[in-house]
Amino acid sequence: MERLAEEIRSKRNRLFWRIREKLRFCRAGYREAGNVDQRFEPEAARLEMQYSLGFLKGRLSPAVYQKNLATLWILERMLDGVALPPRDLNVLEPGCQDFARLPALRAYLRERRCEPRITGLEVDAFPILQGFHSRADKARYYLSLPPGVGSDRFEARDFFRWGDPSYLIFCFYPFVSTNPALAWGLPKEFGEPAQWVRAFEKNLVPGGHLLVVHQGEWEQEAFDEARADSTLELVSRANVDCPFYPLPHPACASLYRRAKA
View 1 (cartoon, helix red, strand yellow):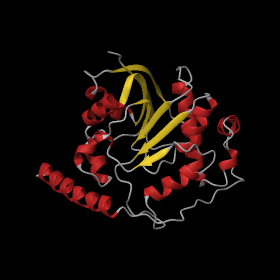
View 2: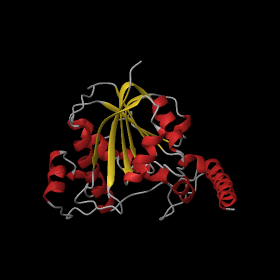
View 3: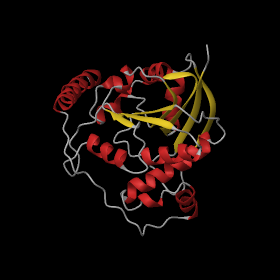
């Protein structure tokens, strides 16, 4: 009975998802009100200063701004020891939702003297959100923020069907079970970790790096089981429970390298 209910919900989600894809709802004029007087504890303030992010404080909502500082905190811990090519660096963020982490990704890679082309992918880009805007509207706003680099882009696409390999992939909180995918309004297959593993392998160049952040160790374990026979080799792993950005479950980050042939 439970399996039947799951199938029915998945089919219903598929129908409404397809409708959203066809309608492609967008509405111009999305903006965020920032708080230039927002203050942080020393570690967050250090990140703000080091990455020169303060000029965006008035253009990002306090919650989004704090998310970007927390993203920088994670990137430092997981990528500072990794050599990155300075030019022609293709970067992918699948499941980017509204691409709100773009300012942090830009700032971190700029600090590393890289010249990246960052692509955000979101399979469900057109739901009508609070304020009568879609995720695509919000992504367009984040892309417009300085320092814009014209090659960055947001694509309303299915990562499992994507075919443009990158050297660096960032993925924050991919679904690794059916229930979260169904709760998000998507068909159940988007909660299958094996699908994610196959897509990561296909879209990561040999020798390239993948950073995956999971919500809790159980999600990390589910992903590990799915990638057991894959070409994704574990490089490092850490709990990244950010002290100034508490989450319901401590985040677990893993850095992988795709094995060369």
